[in-house]
Length: 202
Length: 57
Image (tube, rainbow over all chains, first blue to last red; front, side, top):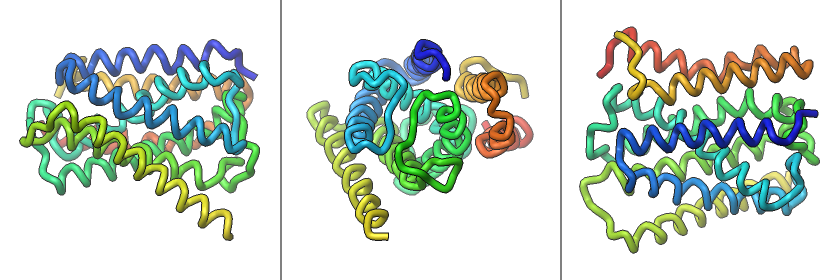
Protein backbone atom coordinates (compact mmCIF):
# COMPACT_ATOMS: atom_id res chain seq x y z
CA UNK A 1 0.00 0.00 0.00
CA UNK A 2 1.21 3.47 -0.88
CA UNK A 3 2.04 5.96 1.86
CA UNK A 4 -0.83 8.46 2.45
CA UNK A 5 1.23 11.58 1.68
CA UNK A 6 2.01 10.72 -1.97
CA UNK A 7 -1.58 10.69 -3.33
CA UNK A 8 -2.33 13.89 -1.43
CA UNK A 9 0.62 15.64 -3.08
CA UNK A 10 -0.33 14.15 -6.45
CA UNK A 11 -3.63 16.01 -6.37
CA UNK A 12 -2.67 19.21 -4.53
CA UNK A 13 0.26 20.16 -6.79
CA UNK A 14 -1.55 19.70 -10.15
CA UNK A 15 -4.69 21.38 -8.75
CA UNK A 16 -2.68 24.47 -7.83
CA UNK A 17 -1.08 24.51 -11.28
CA UNK A 18 -4.50 24.15 -12.97
CA UNK A 19 -5.96 26.98 -10.88
CA UNK A 20 -2.96 29.15 -11.75
CA UNK A 21 -3.49 28.31 -15.42
CA UNK A 22 -7.20 29.17 -15.31
CA UNK A 23 -6.42 32.41 -13.52
CA UNK A 24 -3.82 33.20 -16.19
CA UNK A 25 -6.10 32.60 -19.19
CA UNK A 26 -9.50 33.68 -17.82
CA UNK A 27 -8.90 35.77 -14.71
CA UNK A 28 -9.72 35.42 -11.04
CA UNK A 29 -13.54 35.55 -11.32
CA UNK A 30 -13.66 32.51 -13.60
CA UNK A 31 -11.22 30.71 -11.34
CA UNK A 32 -13.34 31.40 -8.27
CA UNK A 33 -16.47 30.27 -10.09
CA UNK A 34 -14.76 27.05 -11.22
CA UNK A 35 -13.51 26.24 -7.71
CA UNK A 36 -16.82 27.14 -6.09
CA UNK A 37 -18.67 24.79 -8.46
CA UNK A 38 -16.31 21.81 -8.43
CA UNK A 39 -15.10 21.61 -4.83
CA UNK A 40 -18.38 21.72 -2.84
CA UNK A 41 -20.11 19.30 -5.21
CA UNK A 42 -17.19 16.87 -5.06
CA UNK A 43 -16.88 17.04 -1.27
CA UNK A 44 -20.62 16.52 -0.69
CA UNK A 45 -20.99 13.71 -3.22
CA UNK A 46 -17.87 11.92 -1.93
CA UNK A 47 -19.08 12.38 1.66
CA UNK A 48 -22.33 10.65 0.68
CA UNK A 49 -20.34 7.92 -1.09
CA UNK A 50 -18.11 7.25 1.91
CA UNK A 51 -21.03 7.47 4.37
CA UNK A 52 -22.94 4.89 2.35
CA UNK A 53 -20.12 2.42 2.96
CA UNK A 54 -19.54 1.81 -0.73
CA UNK A 55 -15.86 2.74 -0.43
CA UNK A 56 -13.33 4.30 1.90
CA UNK A 57 -10.13 6.30 1.51
CA UNK A 58 -6.69 5.51 2.84
CA UNK A 59 -6.88 8.33 5.42
CA UNK A 60 -10.23 7.30 6.94
CA UNK A 61 -10.53 10.88 8.12
CA UNK A 62 -13.28 13.24 6.94
CA UNK A 63 -11.04 16.32 6.82
CA UNK A 64 -8.26 14.64 4.82
CA UNK A 65 -10.84 12.95 2.57
CA UNK A 66 -12.45 16.33 1.85
CA UNK A 67 -9.10 17.95 1.07
CA UNK A 68 -8.21 15.07 -1.24
CA UNK A 69 -11.49 15.01 -3.18
CA UNK A 70 -11.71 18.81 -3.36
CA UNK A 71 -8.31 19.10 -5.01
CA UNK A 72 -8.77 15.75 -6.76
CA UNK A 73 -11.88 16.81 -8.66
CA UNK A 74 -10.17 19.95 -9.90
CA UNK A 75 -7.48 17.64 -11.28
CA UNK A 76 -10.09 15.24 -12.73
CA UNK A 77 -12.16 17.87 -14.47
CA UNK A 78 -9.86 20.70 -15.56
CA UNK A 79 -7.59 18.94 -18.13
CA UNK A 80 -10.54 17.03 -19.60
CA UNK A 81 -12.53 20.25 -19.86
CA UNK A 82 -9.54 21.92 -21.52
CA UNK A 83 -9.28 19.17 -24.15
CA UNK A 84 -13.06 19.25 -24.76
CA UNK A 85 -13.07 23.05 -25.11
CA UNK A 86 -10.06 23.01 -27.44
CA UNK A 87 -11.79 20.31 -29.51
CA UNK A 88 -14.85 22.51 -29.98
CA UNK A 89 -13.45 26.03 -29.77
CA UNK A 90 -9.89 25.62 -31.03
CA UNK A 91 -6.64 26.15 -29.20
CA UNK A 92 -7.46 29.74 -28.22
CA UNK A 93 -10.92 28.83 -26.96
CA UNK A 94 -10.41 30.95 -23.86
CA UNK A 95 -10.35 34.15 -25.88
CA UNK A 96 -14.00 33.76 -26.78
CA UNK A 97 -16.64 35.16 -24.47
CA UNK A 98 -19.50 33.01 -25.67
CA UNK A 99 -20.32 29.41 -26.43
CA UNK A 100 -23.76 28.64 -27.88
CA UNK A 101 -26.06 26.31 -25.87
CA UNK A 102 -25.29 23.54 -28.37
CA UNK A 103 -21.52 24.08 -27.97
CA UNK A 104 -21.85 24.13 -24.18
CA UNK A 105 -23.73 20.85 -24.30
CA UNK A 106 -21.18 19.21 -26.60
CA UNK A 107 -18.23 20.43 -24.50
CA UNK A 108 -19.87 19.17 -21.30
CA UNK A 109 -20.65 15.75 -22.80
CA UNK A 110 -17.10 15.45 -24.18
CA UNK A 111 -15.46 16.59 -20.93
CA UNK A 112 -17.55 14.16 -18.86
CA UNK A 113 -16.81 11.29 -21.24
CA UNK A 114 -13.07 12.09 -21.20
CA UNK A 115 -13.17 12.22 -17.38
CA UNK A 116 -14.72 8.74 -17.27
CA UNK A 117 -12.07 7.48 -19.72
CA UNK A 118 -9.42 8.86 -17.36
CA UNK A 119 -11.08 7.11 -14.42
CA UNK A 120 -11.21 3.78 -16.27
CA UNK A 121 -7.41 3.81 -15.89
CA UNK A 122 -7.10 5.75 -12.61
CA UNK A 123 -9.57 3.77 -10.50
CA UNK A 124 -8.04 0.27 -10.90
CA UNK A 125 -4.55 1.68 -10.27
CA UNK A 126 -5.70 3.67 -7.21
CA UNK A 127 -7.46 0.61 -5.79
CA UNK A 128 -4.32 -1.46 -6.36
CA UNK A 129 -2.23 1.19 -4.57
CA UNK A 130 -4.74 1.23 -1.70
CA UNK A 131 -5.65 4.92 -2.06
CA UNK A 132 -9.28 3.91 -1.83
CA UNK A 133 -11.03 0.58 -1.35
CA UNK A 134 -14.32 -0.53 -2.84
CA UNK A 135 -16.52 -2.56 -0.50
CA UNK A 136 -19.01 -3.36 -3.26
CA UNK A 137 -17.57 -5.35 -6.14
CA UNK A 138 -17.80 -4.33 -9.75
CA UNK A 139 -17.16 -5.61 -13.26
CA UNK A 140 -14.29 -3.24 -14.09
CA UNK A 141 -11.33 -4.59 -12.03
CA UNK A 142 -13.54 -4.55 -8.96
CA UNK A 143 -14.93 -1.06 -9.60
CA UNK A 144 -18.73 -0.79 -9.86
CA UNK A 145 -20.42 0.78 -12.88
CA UNK A 146 -22.24 3.25 -10.61
CA UNK A 147 -18.85 4.86 -9.90
CA UNK A 148 -18.44 5.75 -13.57
CA UNK A 149 -22.03 6.95 -13.80
CA UNK A 150 -21.32 9.20 -10.81
CA UNK A 151 -18.11 10.49 -12.41
CA UNK A 152 -19.95 11.32 -15.61
CA UNK A 153 -22.75 13.15 -13.80
CA UNK A 154 -20.39 15.16 -11.59
CA UNK A 155 -18.14 16.13 -14.50
CA UNK A 156 -21.01 16.93 -16.86
CA UNK A 157 -22.96 19.11 -14.48
CA UNK A 158 -19.83 20.86 -13.14
CA UNK A 159 -18.57 21.73 -16.62
CA UNK A 160 -22.01 22.72 -17.87
CA UNK A 161 -22.61 25.01 -14.89
CA UNK A 162 -19.15 26.55 -15.27
CA UNK A 163 -19.72 27.25 -18.99
CA UNK A 164 -23.17 28.65 -18.27
CA UNK A 165 -21.73 31.10 -15.78
CA UNK A 166 -18.61 32.13 -17.68
CA UNK A 167 -18.80 31.64 -21.46
CA UNK A 168 -22.12 33.39 -21.73
CA UNK A 169 -23.09 36.76 -23.10
CA UNK A 170 -25.65 37.19 -20.39
CA UNK A 171 -23.87 38.27 -17.23
CA UNK A 172 -25.40 36.59 -14.24
CA UNK A 173 -25.73 38.33 -10.93
CA UNK A 174 -23.28 37.13 -8.31
CA UNK A 175 -26.32 36.22 -6.21
CA UNK A 176 -27.40 33.70 -8.82
CA UNK A 177 -24.17 31.70 -8.69
CA UNK A 178 -25.03 29.86 -5.43
CA UNK A 179 -28.47 29.12 -6.90
CA UNK A 180 -26.88 27.57 -9.98
CA UNK A 181 -24.57 25.52 -7.82
CA UNK A 182 -27.48 24.30 -5.69
CA UNK A 183 -29.41 23.37 -8.83
CA UNK A 184 -26.32 21.59 -10.09
CA UNK A 185 -25.99 19.68 -6.84
CA UNK A 186 -29.68 18.75 -6.90
CA UNK A 187 -29.23 17.39 -10.43
CA UNK A 188 -26.28 15.24 -9.35
CA UNK A 189 -28.04 13.93 -6.25
CA UNK A 190 -31.12 13.14 -8.34
CA UNK A 191 -28.96 11.32 -10.88
CA UNK A 192 -27.10 9.37 -8.21
CA UNK A 193 -30.37 8.56 -6.45
CA UNK A 194 -31.94 7.26 -9.65
CA UNK A 195 -28.81 5.25 -10.42
CA UNK A 196 -28.90 3.81 -6.90
CA UNK A 197 -32.56 2.85 -7.27
CA UNK A 198 -31.89 1.16 -10.61
CA UNK A 199 -28.89 -0.76 -9.22
CA UNK A 200 -30.72 -1.67 -6.00
CA UNK A 201 -33.66 -3.13 -7.93
CA UNK A 202 -31.53 -5.22 -10.27
CA UNK B 1 2.79 23.99 -34.61
CA UNK B 2 4.96 24.48 -31.51
CA UNK B 3 3.94 23.66 -27.95
CA UNK B 4 2.77 26.69 -26.04
CA UNK B 5 3.15 26.55 -22.26
CA UNK B 6 0.02 28.61 -21.70
CA UNK B 7 -2.17 27.02 -24.37
CA UNK B 8 -1.09 23.43 -23.75
CA UNK B 9 -0.30 23.33 -20.02
CA UNK B 10 -3.34 21.19 -19.00
CA UNK B 11 -2.55 18.80 -21.87
CA UNK B 12 1.10 18.49 -20.73
CA UNK B 13 0.01 18.03 -17.10
CA UNK B 14 -2.44 15.35 -18.21
CA UNK B 15 0.41 13.41 -19.82
CA UNK B 16 2.55 13.82 -16.69
CA UNK B 17 -0.29 12.56 -14.49
CA UNK B 18 -0.68 9.47 -16.66
CA UNK B 19 3.07 8.88 -16.57
CA UNK B 20 3.11 9.14 -12.76
CA UNK B 21 0.22 6.64 -12.55
CA UNK B 22 2.12 4.31 -14.89
CA UNK B 23 5.29 4.58 -12.78
CA UNK B 24 3.37 4.01 -9.52
CA UNK B 25 1.46 1.11 -11.06
CA UNK B 26 4.71 -0.43 -12.23
CA UNK B 27 6.48 0.16 -8.91
CA UNK B 28 3.65 -1.41 -6.90
CA UNK B 29 3.27 -4.44 -9.16
CA UNK B 30 0.10 -3.57 -11.08
CA UNK B 31 1.67 -4.60 -14.38
CA UNK B 32 -1.55 -6.10 -15.74
CA UNK B 33 -3.33 -2.75 -15.31
CA UNK B 34 -0.81 -0.65 -17.24
CA UNK B 35 -2.24 -1.34 -20.74
CA UNK B 36 -5.44 0.40 -19.61
CA UNK B 37 -3.59 3.67 -20.14
CA UNK B 38 -4.66 3.41 -23.78
CA UNK B 39 -8.17 4.53 -22.73
CA UNK B 40 -7.27 8.00 -21.35
CA UNK B 41 -4.73 8.35 -24.16
CA UNK B 42 -7.61 8.62 -26.66
CA UNK B 43 -8.58 12.22 -25.65
CA UNK B 44 -4.89 13.12 -25.86
CA UNK B 45 -4.72 11.69 -29.39
CA UNK B 46 -7.83 13.70 -30.34
CA UNK B 47 -6.16 16.84 -28.99
CA UNK B 48 -2.93 16.16 -30.88
CA UNK B 49 -4.77 15.53 -34.16
CA UNK B 50 -7.07 18.53 -33.90
CA UNK B 51 -4.69 21.08 -32.44
CA UNK B 52 -1.31 20.16 -33.86
CA UNK B 53 -1.93 18.13 -37.01
CA UNK B 54 -4.91 20.12 -38.29
CA UNK B 55 -3.77 23.36 -36.65
CA UNK B 56 -7.19 24.17 -35.21
CA UNK B 57 -6.55 27.56 -33.65
